[in-house]
Image (cartoon, rainbow, N blue to C red; front, side):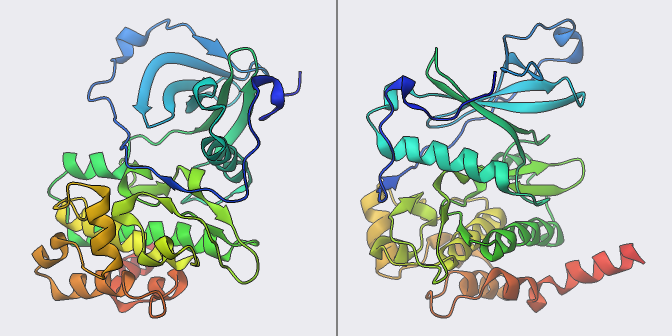
Length: 324
C-alpha cells in the first residue's frame, strides 16, 4: 500500500497562504538511555507501512507538538529517528498543519551533509498521526550538548558555526530559495563523535520566489530578526538567528534571557536593543562577528560571504592542512 500524506480522512483543514506563529517551547531530551543489555530482544512497538522501519518505545525527545522515538531501519541496519505527531488535537489549527506539511516535504527533498536527512513520511489515517523517519544524531541538540560540554575551545565553536553556515548557504542558494525562519540551538543537532552539526526542524521554513521576499511572522522570539515582525524580509533573517545561536554557543545563555515575557523581547528587538549576553563577551573579534550577523538587514552579509570571513581563517587553515 502506498503511503499517503495529509489527506482529508482526519478532517484536516487545508493550510492558509498566510499564518502567524510564535513558538517558544524548547524540546526536552532524556538524560539517561537504556544500556545495550537492557535493549536485548527489544520488540518493535510499531512498523511503517512498507515494513522497512520499526519503532521502539524509547523517546529521544519531546517538543511542543512532536515526539521523537528511537527506531531501526531494517534495510540498512541503522538506527533512525521516528518522528510522530498526533494531528487530532490540531485539526482545526491550519497553521500547525501547514508547519508539519512543510517540514516533511522540505526534508524529503533536501540533500546536504549539514541538513537532517528524511527517509520516509506517511499519514496514519486510523490514528490521525503524521509519521516521518529521519536520521538520528548521536548527541542530541546543540543547546544540551553545549551545556554538557562546558570546556569548548573557540576553534571548536567556529567549526560548529561554520557547518551551520554551510547548511544555510545550501538552503539560501537552493532553487527556489528556502528560508528556515526558526533557527536556534534546540534544532541544530550534533554527532559528537565526529564533531558534526546539522540543521533540523524545518517546520517553519518557507520557499520564496525570485525576489526572495516573505511576508509571514513566524519563529522563536529570542532569535527573530526585527524585520520579521514587519512581515517583509529575506533569507538574511536566518543570518540574524545564526548570530544569536553563536552568541548562545559562546555564552551558554539564551539571548534576551533577561526578559520574562515575549512582549518584552519584542519591545527590545524592534527598538534595536541588543541582548545583555552580548556585553559579556570579552573577545573583540567574537563580539564583532556576532554584531555583523545581527546588524541591520541592509548591512547583514549572506551565508556565502560569512563563510569567507577572516573570522574562520583558523578553521579553514586547519581543514587545508588536514586535507594535505
